[in-house]
Amino acid sequence: MDRYTQVDRIAQRYVDANRFSNIEWHVERDGTTLTRGNVGYADALNKVPVPEQALYRIYSMTKPIVTAVALILIERGQLRLYDPLAKYDRRFGQMRVLQPDGQLLPAARLITVEDLMTHRAGFTYEFITGCHIAPLYERQRISGDGECDFEEMMERLSRLPLAFHPGDRFRYSVATDVLGWVCEKASGQALDELVQQLIFDPLEMVDTAYHVPESKQARLMPMFGIADLSEFLPLNPVEQTLKPARVERMYPSDKPGVFRRGGHGLFSTLNDYSKFARMLLDGKTADGATVLSRKTLELMRTNRLPAAQRPVRVGMLALPGFGFGLGVRVLVDPGQTMNLGSVGEFGWSGAASTYFWVDPVERVSGVFMTQYLGSTLPLAEDLRTAVYQQLD
Image (cartoon, rainbow, N blue to C red):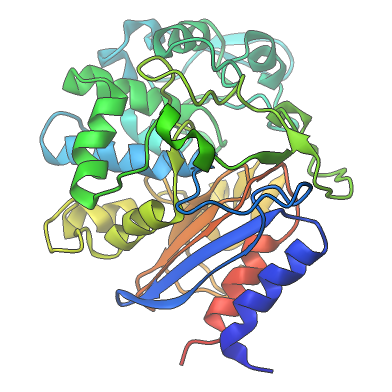
């Protein structure tokens, strides 16, 4: 069996089993394409072909982009890791912590920018299984309401208690949304303007934005799976089938200037996000212009979690062997991880089964795209393994 076509075979197997409608991928090594392909349909139920430069909702793959914006602001002296969140929004200056027993305590200290970048601020998500304040987020629709603007989201969030004292633990959360809000306050610019100016324009990411204009709507990929992340039950997964899902209410495509978030919200293509992933290898554009300095990249991809706060968990799902840097998970112990990789490899994923990673040791950057919300299948792990097994 040819090990150089393993990615193609695995992707085709998932599509043939009707687990995903389509899978697109692009992996590079030292700037040269290692493997690239596209199998399936935009809508397999109706045999609708995948359009050229298909647009995907990338959900939490928005987070590393917004983190990169914050890091550029740090380089420019407009922001610091130790800055308190309350410096930029006083509503977060006197947060309280709700204990599991119902007791409310004043937060032991202020939330910092570093806490936001490492998901140690005390926030949560509606869908985090076992989190005692997640039901409060659900009632307020903190991340599930795409109709409200950024200001209203922060107003709702500031009124809710924290799940734990800042810095005490890692909990995946809306912290990157708050980071995006801080970027706006620190720079005096809206987040959609910042990502365009600092990331998309230099990297020529021509199709990535917080909305899809009418001229590109035909390229927007349909969603399958669950309609709301609050329905996600990783411990009780049901058989994955191609059930169409309507997600416009949470993730609108037609609200330019109104809908913008730090933790999700961007639309992108395989080509565009591959440019961003490639940049994270050395901080430079294809023509050599610097987006992020070498030392800033080193800071970004260095684990900041003490051993007691590892492994990284997304709700009940653990990532053995991984710590967390600034906005990205980082492989720290290959003896614990269940996947092929290298020490220092980093990246993140999106709720609709999108995925990217960067391996500085092997000089590899890769992106997988599809649209299935709430999958528990090991698609990304299988494709990554297929990539690594072909390296010399």
